[in-house]
Image (cartoon, rainbow over all chains, first blue to last red; front, side, top):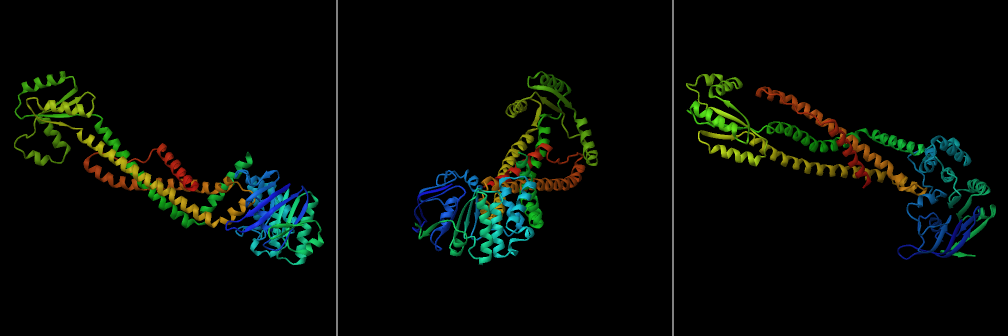
Length: 217
Length: 290
C-alpha cells in the first residue's frame, strides 16, 4: 500500500528531515509512527499525502510514485487518503455538518446520499448531536473527532493520523483509539503518529520508530 | 452527469448568495464598473445614432448649381438639356428664384424680413442628382461644373456629410480605445475583488486541496463569481444608458421641435445588448481566471 525506498527529505536551508527511509506498509495494516517531536513524523506523513515531495528516493502510495505524480492526478490520490491533522484544520465559517460534508462535495456525491453519509460519520465519532454547532464551540477532543469524521466520510482506504491524541487526556485518547481500531477491523490501512507510550501499550501494533529523521529498529 | 450539473447549479446559487451577503458593497462595486462600462457603450450608442443620420444624408449626394442673376430663359433651357445629357447626371431639378424665395419664406420664420425685400435676391438654381460615384469623382464633377459659363456657384451638398463621416471614424477609434481601457478596468476590478475573496477563503482552499479538491473545483466558484459580476455590470451599464438616453431624448425633443424635424436617440439593438452582456460576462470570467 505504502512503500518507501531510500527516501531523503531535505528542506530548503539544508535541514535534513528524513534520512534513508525504507519501509513497507501492507494493505489493511495498522502501524504506529513514533519518535520525539522533530523526529520527522509529520514530514513522513506529508510525503505520503504528497504535500511534500522526497528530495531523493521513492515514496510509492497506492502504486503511485508521489515524486512524479502529475498535478492533475494528485487530487484523486488524496481522495483515497483520510488525513487527520494535528491542528485539525477545521473551517470555522460553517457547521460541523458542513465541515464533514466538504469532502463529499469535492468528490461530487449526490446530495441526499451524502447527507446520510455525513450523519453516519458523525454518529461514528459520537458527534451526531452537535452537527449544527460551529467547530469553534467544540472542545479539543470534539474537534479532533470532527476531524476524524471528515477524514472517514468518503471511506478512504488509508487513514493518516498526525498526533490524533496529541493534546487530549487519557480518556479521550482511548475513545479515539477505539474508533481507529474499528476502522482497522474493517480493513482500512492506518498510519498513526504518536509520542504517547500508553497508547502503544494499550493498543499494540507494529511501530516505526524515528529518531532525528532515521528509522531505528 | 446529473450530479455534475447539480454541482454547477449549487455553485451558482452559492455565488448569488455571496452577492446578497454584502448588498451595499456589491451594489457600489457593480455601479462603479457599470458606470465605467457605460461610457464607451454610451459613446457607441451616440455614434451609431449620428452615423444613421449621416448615412441618410450622405446617401443621396446632390450638387446645387446657382446661376448668375439675369440668366435668360433661353440659356436656362440650354443648360438644362446639356445637364440632362451629361453621363454623370441621373436627373435634375430646376428651382426658379421665385419658388426658392417662397420655400425660404415657408420653412423659416423669416417671412417678415423677406416680405420687406424690394426684390428677390435669390438666383435660379439647378439641383443635380448625380449617378452613384465616390467622393473624389463627385468633387471632380463639381469642379467641372464650376467651369461652365453662367454658373455662379456650385456646391456639393453632401460634402459636410463626408466630413462628418471622417469625424465619426475618429470618434469610433476614440470609443474603441476607451472601451479597451475600461474593459481592462473591468478585468482588473474583478481580479482584485476575487483576490480579496481568495485571501478571505484561503483556509477553505487549503483544506479543500488537502482533501482532494481539483483545481477546477476550487476555481469554479470564483469563475462563476466573475461571470455573474460581469453580467450584472453589463445590465447596470444598459440601465444607465437607458436612463441617460431617456433624459437626452427629452431635451432633444425641445431642440428638434425648434428645427421642425423629429430625431430621437435610439437605444442599443437587442443583438447589441446581448453581445454587451456576453462580453462583460466574459470579461468578468477572464478577470476571475487571472
